[in-house]
Image (spheres, protein in one colour):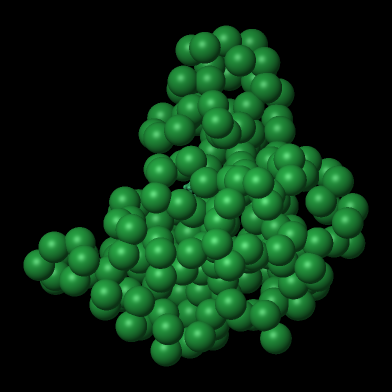
Length: 213
Ligand code: GRF
């Protein structure tokens, strides 16, 4: 069985989508790790009977020690893939290289547009007509790894960042489990070393959903 580890810092609505689609797509969440002890994502995992683990960055002297502790906790479950789902710590090359080609992130924009924070407000400000979410391999460049798949939503004239965020999240909840399903089915492959050359153009969400159905 394809096993994933999910890292969360907050509400974990993407985690919930990943939990709800385990059976349908044939993967298993082996562990949910959070750096925040009261993250609601941990409650979601516990309610689903999934092992949880807290590694609080404040308990460690520096990023590397924190990351080594996360690596030790995660590797006890031998995950095939590490899935960042609203994990709000910047990772150093130590962690990124350890899971090179095996780590995914979901970012709420149509990358390479709007890397970083406040993506919905920025999309409205820039008068974008289309916005969305991207799932990408994690590399040392923040929000800069090769994009695997994207989901799109329209930006409406009377949108607020909150309304737009909600619309994007509904797409995220389809997109992220479908990307994991793509890995399970071999439609998407995890390169041993991330290289842009090896990654085709991002798959659009509707096509990906068709392929993994
Ligand atoms: C999502 O918008 C995701 O794209 C970003 O963080 C947010 C996490 O939301 N990386 P949730 O915790 O999954 O509800």
